[in-house]
Length: 333
Ligand code: UT7
Image 1 (cartoon, rainbow, N blue to C red):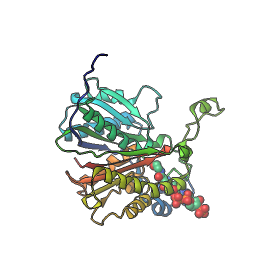
Image 2: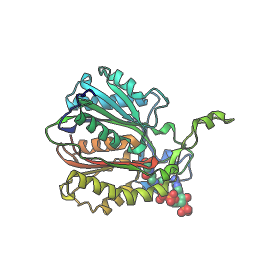
Image 3: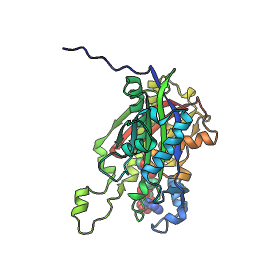
Image 4: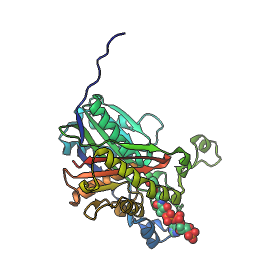
């Protein structure tokens, strides 16, 4: 049996740069409630959302991804040709194949980087960061790019009062590369497929095509069941991520949960007994729920507004359809 040369990578990995892209159309609650029996007051009280961003036709998944990635690369001081792998977390690239990551890698000018999409819905960004960290430490990539991007407005039924006011569009990206100290803690992740039906595409594409009046199979969600699961289970996942990273709650500076609902964020913060001084991401108020893009968008806003700074210790928790979840502690780039 031949002895194979093992892959060897960097001792540690970290997020080296972060970028995001917010679509230009701002949609206030007043506009959303034109199509549903609801009110600005109800939406703000139950979700914390005041307005959201929906993409214009020109703001495609690829366009928003490239814009966010270019900013991340520039801030990381990394050239696109140094990127060995592009991972795109999305559920709104409208081709079953090929992956949009390949087109993004090409447009950015990588040197034919490995490129693939992952489907872990709202948990996709944290899945991507975990994969990228392992690729860099395992020797499969010198630098990896992780993008979370969605155009949920394409698959949201604007007449469905259970989802129309929540979902939104945008992109966020990070460059993951070698580091002298650990900048990405161990991931705590998992899934509960018994709850597969709680958030999903309404029907299978084959049923859409076979129907007499084919229309976009929109997202459907049993919101309250997801709300209860996330509020109770995700605080435990966050605590496990802190424990696995060897970080106590007193070392934490920043909390960036998936921007699903402001009340879920508050419930998690209470359950984890976060000290008052820990800054909490609240991007959902202005941006809506952008699924795989929500964590990098929220962290970028915190950096812009001075609520997070380079070197801070941040806890990321992502959760959504599947039900899938992932959490890790990272150092803010
Ligand atoms: O990103 C992926 C993960 N997704 C999530 O984490 C989403 C989690 N879920 C949620 O954010 C919340 O469940 C929602 C914001 C979607 C809904 O809030 P809720 O507090 O769970 O509302 P509910 O579905 O329990 O409904 C409460 C009441 C009902 O009326 P009654 O039966 O109490 O009279 C609903 O009919 O609110 C009513 N309702 C509405 N009223 C005005 C439901 N939707 C609306 C609406 N406007 N849009």
